[in-house]
Image (tube, rainbow, N blue to C red; front, side, top):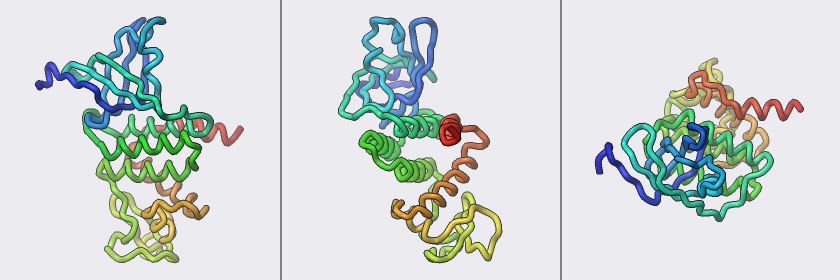
Length: 239
């Protein structure tokens, strides 16, 4: 198989975003388990009688086939696999947030099967009404790890075990240091770091500090790119 005439059949995928291309077609941003993030041209998808109109659902498992070797491939076939309830209310906003993170942080055509599975699990949990905050932190942590930015949570930057009752400053790309040793970085308790390592979000303080820590880390790796979904969250809270 050459890049010039690459053809892929029956790939497990999710639709992250779509936008119009010409009067009748769409450009799809997809996340495929074995192929990573791709752009596909869906010819005729905007036509009223197109079979694709009832198939290309966000937050739903899809099976896609495509061909082509350029930056934008051509969609050949799409099948909606179903089996997952539609996201509603707060869960829908969280889903859009996950999609925006993937769109802005994940490079094109870089396969991440573990991240794909984590995304599918997060959507399934959200569709069942799971606690959004815990699902967000769990996914964000896996996202950073899979992109090469894994968090050091059980040991500090000097390799010493994290102590639950101690206060730390977490420094991007270095890790945690006791707060009395360094004044820079995000302030966080040792218990929060250990809870994050175990995906334990039962403690309200852990939820708050984990949110603040992940926000600081993501802001660094986003390099100033704003998150529109976060702006929506803030506006809704003000309302």
